[in-house]
Image (cartoon, rainbow, N blue to C red):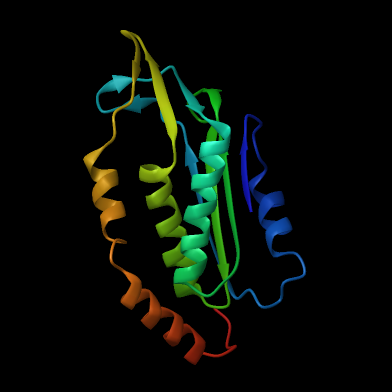
Length: 169
């Protein structure tokens, strides 16, 4: 499930809705991203996120489908906010549910790593010195790079998870 919205979200309610009635879920991994009040050594007063709706939703769907192809997942959730956000506000919620914890952990990490580098969001920070667009970070690219060419490893993870059977997380 994917949602791009201006409104805040309730993490507990979203998790409950994602897993409701699905007793095959043995592990759920969740990442919540927040606006920080500092970037590097510069204070941040606010951040504005912009996007092109059709393009953004299409890319998020592709990222979600890729995760579902790599791991045996029961459910996934991506909620990403846009608009003007203040320090402490929630920006993103990513969740991956699987019969087993390893798949949930890896898929959640994959989703946020690829979201940071492949989702078409543009960020503008407001600082005491004015506003500026946020450039791509090499650390985010490096985190996402671990997932390139990972098809064979993903196949091995799926096979291992299926071998574990229904023992839960």
